[in-house]
Image 1 (cartoon, rainbow, N blue to C red):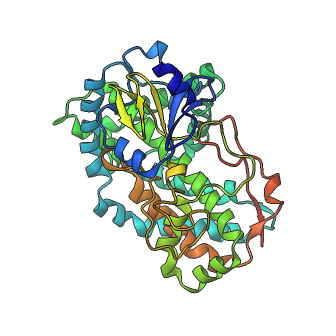
Image 2 (image 1 turned 60 degrees about the vertical axis):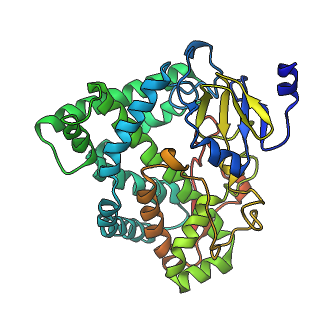
Image 3 (image 1 turned 45 degrees about the vertical axis):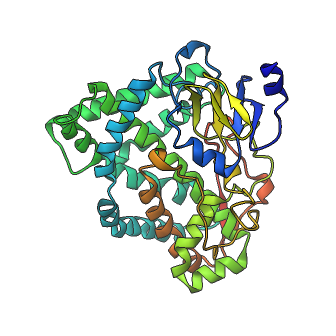
Length: 386
């Protein structure tokens, strides 16, 4: 009977869906419910029977459980959060701001020297986060095409072998880099992780694994947000002009870009991309019971458009003052790289409207191609003119 009720639960803030892999899951769309679950210790990335767990996709990086021991998962998460809180401290991030601004300005200078149309995705959106995360982690920028290929493989939702090959490739690359850092440490996050082993207990391979995850997540998501921000501002001449006239609006503008969904037609998935979690015990929420072992998808995109929290959520408004979006998560699962991403986005969008006041897509928006096979989606290119 409970199974019948679960099967019928297709509306409300918590509802039953089918993942792109064809497995059943609970999709959570409500802001209040997602915020509550992000602080619930009964939800995690592990599953007691990983081989039998429901999957979001064939991607080994996000679409499947990470292990089978909830206690070990929580302890490992806490250890790395302690280390990363130092590496991504507010003081360290603010110290990076002038360098990030310099990098963004240089990329815009190079963009202005090109004859339009130019691929903004390739010229600015991709290199800026990669340059920044490489400097922060201590990864050679000249290796970007190698780890870009691994990242695209990891994110493949349709082919498990491809995804796992990308994960192994990036892990192998990072393992070699970690070994070099042991003999020649620098002022970077990988060196911080190595040094932290003197006081924290985590396995040798944990450093390479964590560094690989930081490199992957530290650039691919920000690339997509930059593309989204360009499209949103290009579609609203008033907001673009206001930001050009008053760069002080950039903080609010960036938060609104982070909150808004991508303004592209036909880009929705059967289940939105987001953190995949498994219930370690029965959880009553949103009028339903999520059973132990069930897959839970936290739809931050839905939460960020919750009318109980946001006024006129469908409207892009860079003057919005109350904007508690959940794009970076919440509580213990708040993204440690959020301050860095904000600095990158603020540096770029503070300059872009004034430097390129007539910037616009060089093709109709509906003709832009998206990477539908990848876990984080995103554009294949963003041709612009001015």
